[in-house]
Length: 149
Image 1 (cartoon, rainbow, N blue to C red):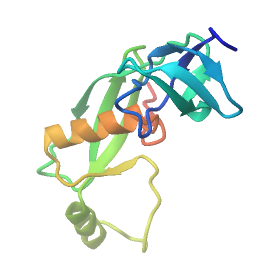
Image 2 (cartoon, one colour):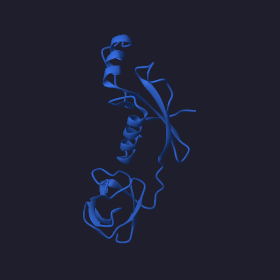
Image 3 (cartoon, rainbow, N blue to C red):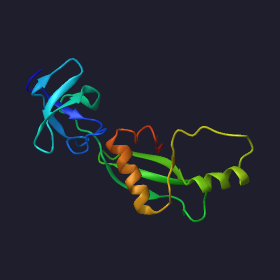
Image 4 (cartoon, one colour):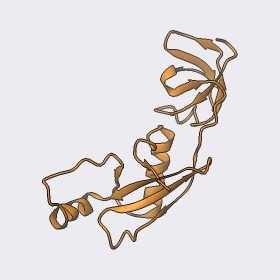
């Protein structure tokens, strides 16, 4: 396995050493870990769970936009556009807006929305940070739905 190229899919607690989508060369291999040279130039052992074997192109988030005015809606749609041209969408809200939604809109006592992101604020920069964090940890696909054309 030495010399094999692996592609990072999630950074976990290794933000100092890994970048999602980057390729790394395996220096050594243990049962459940790879020894690689991280972005910081040091050799580190990292769980295989963070990688996929091979030189894989991983689409990255190029841009996103609010589809609704965050000041007017409690659940706001956002469209995510990736480097491979694919698009996905999510709903974003804050805890207070979610309470408002329950008070005004809910006809049933609860719901399950896998593509709902709850943020501290609806500030553009805060939403951007959340999306980047989810992407770096390979959770953005789970937190969004494919945009059907």
